[in-house]
Length: 476
Ligand code: ADP
Ligand code: ASP
Ligand code: MG
Figure: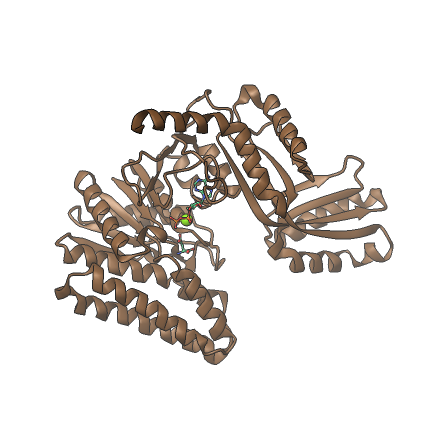
């Protein structure tokens, strides 16, 4: 049994949607396959936009709803056989009227709770999965929709809910035993529900996570993630046009890539399958014949110096300077307590050796919340001048070199420094954890694209030349 997931761009046009249906039925013929689907590209953004308008009492939400409807009606007319269109339209219209009622309620109240927001943003996946199942059926392929809200149990952290694996694994295993083996099950990605039955979302791009939650629970032979690139590349191809496709990554490398900005997989994707040793394959819907990237156990591949370069943008550093170091310990304890209480993910923390300053790097979106809370937490210390300054610096990026070959790490570190020096790139903070095979450093955001490109040239320049040469031999 395998799990295959298609992202929003993979089903972005009716033609692509039909291609995806073809890939699915081809896969299913060889092995029982569970499909996980994202919303059609752009729909989730539109739903978020509609919530923003309706919750501020702006009727523009109606126009967005109409756009969402018309996109799905165009798909309906092209991916469903004529005889089945009427019945599918009824199903879509039922979903649209539910969606409309929710948005109208938000508009009237001029307020949208996180709970209601999740029940709205996950509609894109309900709509795309309905279209897929009906498209397959209209081509004579047996398929059925299974709502992930009945299968994936989360906490009530709406917007980015945490999965309760003990309950979810059991729900999925029970569900699986009841499945008709001659019918393709299609599950809406990005979606779960809490113990009160309210719909939750798994965070933006969370359908990758849905696929590995299912693959891990059911011990799938593989989880295939179909997207719009040839696999995991040596850098984001939107930034480095010469990036090359990697054949293989370890779970550890893939997880580092995902957490450190490699958008091709959602940060939580690896954990559910790693323990069971279920591999992942990243494949290209636009180029289905390409082998893609295999993610599995470490491969001891020593012929490459590094695997990939990633970056995270929109970071902020908050630095605290104490004047009375005797209070240091207590200040740090309270500061960490505050971070935990606010549930702000920490990118990194740097403390000066003399204990007089500490900088915390977080995503910029937390700036106001974090600064406000720190200042109110430490009012007495600030008044007594035990804490001197609290400074923030915005517009930072974290560049990471991932999957460094163990035996050449110190050499790689030196080369990174040399490249940065040669190109006049100032690294504000350099993070070299001796236990990690990744290296990260902070640069000012305007430097990030140049930094990634010059590092890529340093470490992949030769491979690019040899790929070009072999293509010239093959096709020249
Ligand atoms: P999907 O809609 O299929 O989930 P995403 O947009 O979430 O697709 O992820 C695919 C995108 O990830 C690619 O178009 C690419 O720009 C980006 N990306 C970032 N880093 C990498 C990388 N190292 N390798 C491949 N793609 C990457
Ligand atoms: N549709 C959701 C999003 O755009 C989830 C996903 O695509 O994985 O974030
Ligand atoms: Mg994605």
